[in-house]
Image 1 (cartoon, rainbow, N blue to C red):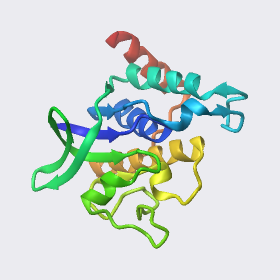
Image 2: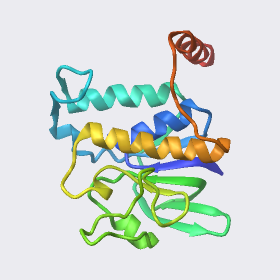
Image 3: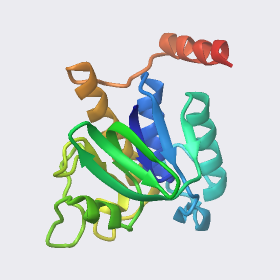
Image 4: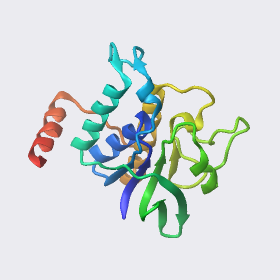
Length: 194
C-alpha cells in the first residue's frame, strides 16, 4: 500500500507530491502529461522572471524525482473508497493508498464518480485544506475553482493538501519550513541516496 497517490502531473499534483515525499511519505504520481502548462509561459509566478511552461514542469519533475516520487504515465480510470482505504485503478492494475490527491485540472469526472460533493458552481467542494467530502481525498487546482486557473494557485492548493496529509500523519499541525542549516541536511540526504 502506498501512502499517497496523486492523480495529475501539473503544478498542483507535483507540488503535493514534492511536499509529501520530501517529508517521508511514499508517493506515486499518475501523470499522462496532459497539463495545460505546455501551452503556458510564466511571467507571473513569484520568484521566476520568465519561463516556458514545459521548462517549469521539467524542473518540478526533477524535484519530485530527487525526493523519490514514483511517476507513472498511466491514465487513471477510477478512484474508489473501500473499508481498507482508497483504490486508484488504471487499465492494467489497481493501487491502494491511505490518501489520494486529485489534480486533474478542470476535469472533475473522477471526483464525481467517487461521490465527492460539488458546489452550486459545479466545482468540487473543498475546505481550506483542499479535502473533499470523501475522507482522505483531496481536490486541487482548477477542480475546486471557478475559472480561477493559475499555476501558482494550483501549486499552493497542492501544498495545502500535502500539509494537511502530513499533519494527519504526524498527529499535529505540520509545517514544511527549512532553514539554511536544514537545507544542507536535506540536500545531503539526497546526495547520499543517489
